[in-house]
Length: 283
Image (cartoon, rainbow, N blue to C red; front, side, top):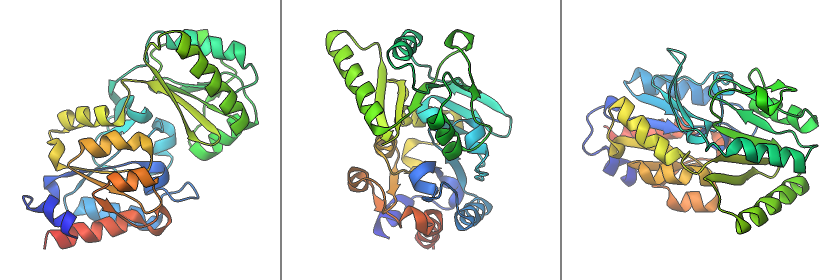
């Protein structure tokens, strides 16, 4: 409670700060859903004058599918874009480097059986369909990617790409890239295993923390007046950038250690817990 009091000491109402939350692993439970309790708490938060935004690796269709109530612009593509749900408009992007297309072509050739999924600002595409592509569509929800596309048919900037695959296949692809970039300079492409069965690629400049700075600029909030909630390593920079940070009890140990407040497990309606603390801090 002390941590909330410290953050709220110069604030008179819910309208004096911006709350930003990650989705998977934070606002969402282990069944890949946002509970009705969390949605009700978000509605109450906004009815009290609060501003709420999401910051997620998800894209437009898969985030809209969750029906999370927001009342300001949000960060998608793991920091690769900022989107206005009301206006249905991409406001800002941080594309991957031009060398990304050559890397995807190289990886397609080296691992022809994997289902590479490529994300442009408003659409995404699976280059090779398989059972793992179906798994990814199931956990993402929404309309799913366009399948059977060729890389040269995808126009516009690439904001991220992923490969859903077995842990063994992902380890093989990761080792290949490690060896590749020991011999040659990495042009600015970051890669990490976000789940045991999901390998993600973004630009090194595509970062939730950097996108949070742009979100602050566009919304007019000072970074010190932003609360950020997240659970994974890709949330760390945003947590450090925000004025106050929250992690669920189920977050990674490193994330919990970095957080100003550790809330309840992701299955126990984190937003309801956070709202109660915010209300008490304003009493």
